[in-house]
Image 1: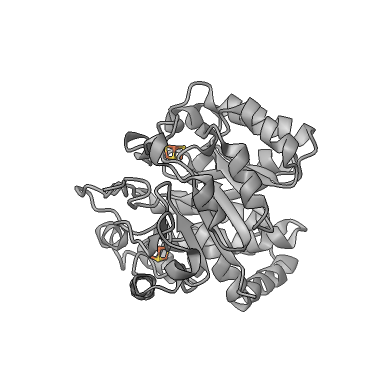
Image 2: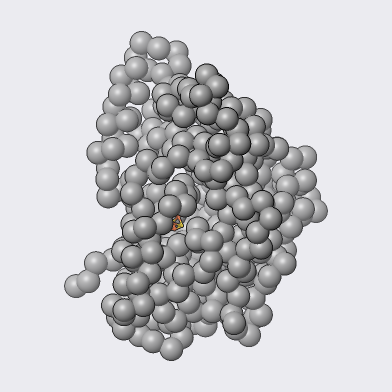
Length: 365
Ligand code: SF4
Ligand code: SF4
């Protein structure tokens, strides 16, 4: 039996939001081109599937998609902006064991400014609370941290903790997927300080899952300072993304779209073992974009478990004696910036931000 994979299915590039860090809504997919149930049936067995967009609940047939993916995946998590409350609730009634992550970009005002959705915060928050009331276990917030919302980070964590929900974080990335090449953190120490506080709160909890999440957030500080990833990136080896056009890709972090093959026209085995897929794997091996998104880090954390585990052990030990077991100055680059050994301009150059570049929108040619 072949090994189960980790897959992300981008069911649409249509989106009802207008986020300031993503132009995907300006380059939507045409519904008639979007991935069909027949193509979804060709996907391999997966131990984890993320369904995302665009906004996945824009698809009228989202239930049929989940029904199909349920047959081949041990665990499904849907990432959504949470606007279509009734559709989300309706889906979860049929599939109470799936996970739902609602992106909330800060407290009410900050979220609504960043997301550009009328009443977006209340819609998302209401959806989360309703899911909780229904008894859904795997629900949570997702937040993409930038200068504007960093001060809300720990408040939002507190809110999710009070509701007993998961709290997933990310920071700004540039790629064809976001149709964006200008995302950059301007005030790195300010943003890092908020992450530092979050790391310490997570370390103090009694949940091993949160301790590993603390490590992930430590990696985010490293990422926003433009440093080498803390763990290797093995995307396209046992992980894949598939876009609305049936193109299978290693990830969503590349500048231009990298295609391993098209599942509309090929079988999975043919595609996964093709020369083209091997060529993309070589690109991944030499990739220097150093993304730190959960999609590529979670498989790496499982694969190289001793790296985060050792980090957790050291910090949990420190937590026995110290109020603040973690300091962002553990990272050399953070110390060097504080001490004036590296300038803001030098760090800006390490980012994936191409100030004047036009990002490829990954649309069907
Ligand atoms: S980040 Fe997500 S919700 Fe926001 S515009 Fe992009 S696809 Fe839509
Ligand atoms: S670092 Fe990994 S996830 Fe990021 S673009 Fe490169 S291959 Fe993709």
